[in-house]
Image 1 (spheres, one colour):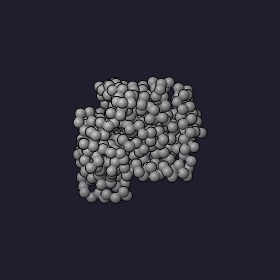
Image 2 (cartoon, helix red, strand yellow; image 1 turned 180 degrees about the vertical axis):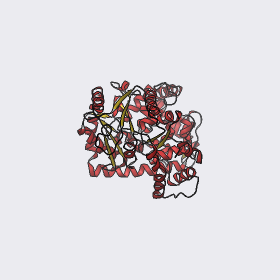
Image 3 (cartoon, helix red, strand yellow; image 1 turned 135 degrees about the horizontal axis):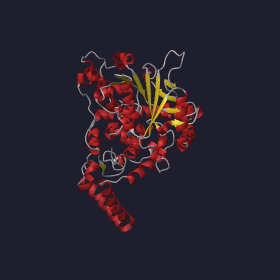
Image 4 (cartoon, one colour; image 1 turned 90 degrees about the vertical axis):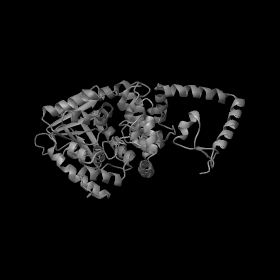
Length: 471
């Protein structure tokens, strides 16, 4: 089953949101279906989190998880050395890639050297980050995503909207439409079970054809050289065991010291990510197939990607490396719940993406420098993080680090505002004047359009003319 044939069969059903960050955000805010889909998913997650906190003591587990991750990052160089030695001891190969380009060159070269024509992939944010699919396809190698959400997005030419649930922004009807276009027939049901059955049939032959399986890594256990992959569908188990070559791509910060550390992270990860006390599948892989074993790959390659992570150690942003990619901060964020992940223009969206993307891409990147301002600083993301990353504080630091005409204009405006608020007389005059102004412009208690610099605010939201508002 050709990925290229799949894509041409139905066209692009739901193209990625295009334009600048501001344009993407405005476009997303105008999509009521998108907002309904996101709110449904986020509300379901929030209800599950209440159960996790009540029944499983998640708040107590959070303190230990934070200590584990802080210690892991502090000891990162030694842990990576230990991980590398133990993977090789188990018969695997390890490559330390300085950036995404180096990682892609190694994996593409390996596939070409082994005569691989079809690659089966399980969900991996690291491979999204380095754009591995594009590199493989540019070399004539067919890539098929086997995670249901990722396969849906591959057919639709879209990027993930969420770290854990990549197609969460689409409802069943939209998914059914994508499947019908891909299959070239209207004979595709739109119920959940029917859609899953259709995908299973379409993807099954991929595992038999693939010469290489590529996965991400949730946790690398340094003491044994084991990679841990958490999933709920079972496709990662096939990707890592059926093809003759398994390549695991791991961000360098994902390593932990031992199984005591790993067990705690593996427990809290599904609780934070999907509001379940355990994942359906936890795959523990230590090297390739050994003599006498009936399954597993002939070759195992671990590609450890730096990509700017190493430079964050010892800085004010070091704590961002503790992230376990659960996606809890996304579901909790009012901004993400309004516009979805694709508006961010990065594989990593939500509060964690708004911080880490500019850090990895560099402060001068025009595509990401404004991302730290995609937040209301309400603090919900910090409360939701299962490893206690102070996300609101890091967002403020990231804003201070950003440099753009927009931020310089904001600095001048806030300086003038500060001077106004510091003096009692000007403060009182300003408050009275503003009240009169918004009441004159208001309709039914709300201001729907402001002039000048306020136009950007009311373009996508209304402002109450009185407090509390009437609706």
